[in-house]
Amino acid sequence: MESVKNKLIVSKDNQLIRASYELSLSEQRVILLCIANLDSRADKPNHHEFIISADDFSKTMGTAKENAYRDLKMAVNKLYGRDIYFDDVGDIEGKGWKWLYSKEFNKTTNSAVININPKLFPFLFELKKKFTSYRLRDVSKFKSSYSIRIYEFLIQYKKNNELVVEVDWLRKKLQLGEKYPRTSDIKKKIVIPAVEDINAFSNISVTYEQIKAGREISQFVFKYSVEPEPNQPLKKVTKDMIVKYARPVESYEDVKCRLLKNGIPATKLENLK
Image (cartoon, rainbow, N blue to C red):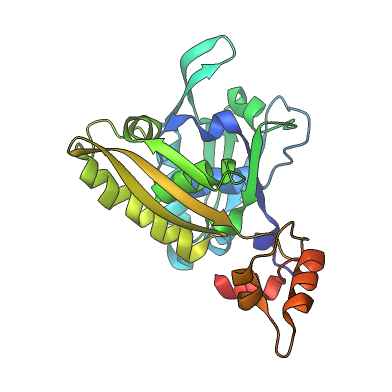
């Protein structure tokens, strides 16, 4: 039976994905766990309370169980002071809001009770178009918070299989400020670890190239492919896919027909993790 973790889906309005903010890995995990447990199709509520137990936090996000409550408290306390900035939301320009409206902890149940700022609800509820969804499991094992951001940038444009990112744009979206003043540091500390995380733990296979303006890197070009959902029919089957997913004594045409009809088996996808 598929675990609860495997069923959790994160859905965000694309403006939320492109917003500017800085969160640690633990803070990202708190926000993603909340979002994955709400119904993005539901009407916007007046308020929405999330209860996150240390046990759920540990199991879902792969953190150490013995330190889960301590880590959860630290993440929520830091998250409470964090801002998120939008470049352009309707008539609003350069607006900054807090992520959380309130927080409290229950040491009896080892849980955190938080309310996401209601101003963010339009980017989380009643999502019908211009939004992006992905499985929480595809980012839960990442080792860097920047990996999650870059994964979201890629998965938002998953049909394109290529994304060109300006270094200045990336610096702004990740709220780097004076951090990593040299572009080579951004490459070393952000881009390379993100590519490694994404290839190792997610449903995306990605490579990157760099474009220079003079002696400085001005752009990163990500080229990638997204694995189809298990057992979803494919629109196109390549020779490499046939070789990769062929069964013993299966002919070329048999493999092609099977993949076009049934997609890639879930067991094959599991083996790639």
